[in-house]
Structure formats: structure tokens, C-alpha cells
Image 1 (cartoon, rainbow, N blue to C red):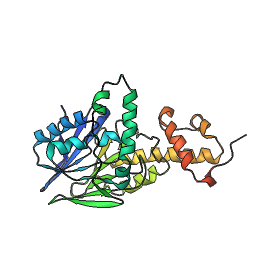
Image 2: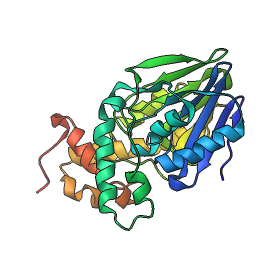
Image 3: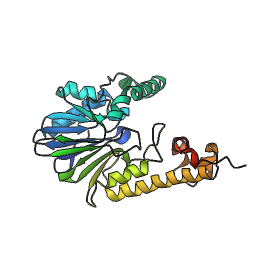
Image 4: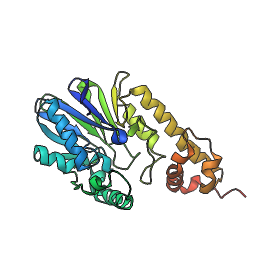
Length: 283
């Protein structure tokens, strides 16, 4: 059973094997803020037990880093277990939770052999209650925590959490360690590198960085991932400018990741290019 590990003063991370999800607690004199809540009600009850075992204070607020199910399907359970509390997210994430969750339920309805099908389908969705568009500061009593929407990348509603006095940044799925970041049908591959530039600007060389999935990393790791995402974005722009059709781009380009991970990235990138950046297909 995972334990919350203190990675900086009063910042604890628990890493769960299912999807390599990280759940983070940030403590202040007024209580704990939990960042992300896992992917089902059943798994969230496990997290709740781990919070109680840590015994670092009352849980007083939740933060969802974006609208994908594996980061907020535990919201309702946390409220049931610890009482009513604000749930913070970007406006975009709040407005798209229901649609995104619907896609997840449809996927699991069809996945009749998936071992976690029933527990996911049994989950009640509880959307965020407190939203912002650019940045907001949470008051934990003797500590301030910053929520920042740095731009579009993994989704249009990503936020990062900065704990300035501990020099910690929680990257959500803008940063992933267990695998390369997932570029899906709701991602913005051409904008993701510049979004990470803003995130990098929130860091010092000593910053502790907690990704949405995987092990704790540092600023150098984020810089390297930004470079890879930048190569993907520039390769898409170059191929389109040379008239390579979208259906030939994957096999034509030289990519930093396996091609099968980049099907959505290429399609989305071509869709998001300004018209002036696309040429007629090569004869």
C-alpha cells in the first residue's frame, strides 16, 4: 500500500501503481490541499485511508489539474470521506468535465474484459466548484499555494501548482515521467512547448517537480521533455510547409518518440496549423 512521502517541507506525494498516478498533499496551518484524486471511487477510498494514516491534518480543499477522469474521479469520495470542501480547477476543465467523463464511461462500457470496468462505471462524477482563468492563490494559513494556467498543452484546461516557500511545482500531465506525455485528441501539440516555457519560468535549478504520472523529477527533466515536444511541433510545421500530406507525415518525419504514440499529435498539429503554414500536397 502506498505511503505519502514528504518530498519537501509539508509536501507529500503518494504514487499509485494503477496508471502511475501521483496524488499530492500540501500542508498548511489551516489544513491540507489534495492535488488530484485518482481514477475511481474505489481507488479514492484507498487514497483517503492513506491520508488518514499520514495524520498531517484535516483535508480542506481539492485541486484537479485538468478534466481527464484519472485526475478527478475521486472527487465525490473525498467529499464523502472528509466533508464538503472547495474543488479548484480552471474554467475550461470545469466546463468540460462532464463531456470528458462521458467519453470515459463509454470506453469502459465497451471494455467488457477490463479488470477495473465495474469500479470505474460505479464512480460518481463531482465537477470542480471553484474556478479561475489565469491564476489564483490559495491561503493555507501560514502558506500560500499558487494555481497557474500556463497555456494549452495536454488539454486546454491544464493547471500547475506552485508552492513557492518549498520550491515545488506540480506539473499535472503537462509533465509525465512514467511514459512520454500523452498527446491525445484534445491536446495542443503546437502550443505545448511554449506552455512548458512558462512552467519552466516558475522553477529554480533546485525545484522539486512532481509530474502527473511517474517519479518525482527536476527542472532539467522538464527542460528535456520540452525540447522533445518542441521537436515534434517543429517537425509537424516543417512537414506541412513542405506539402507532406497528414496521412504521410508519421512515416516521413523523424520523431523523438515511437510513431504509434504520435498519431493524434500529427493529426491535431495539422488541424491547428494556420492556413498560411500549409502547402499543397507534394505531387
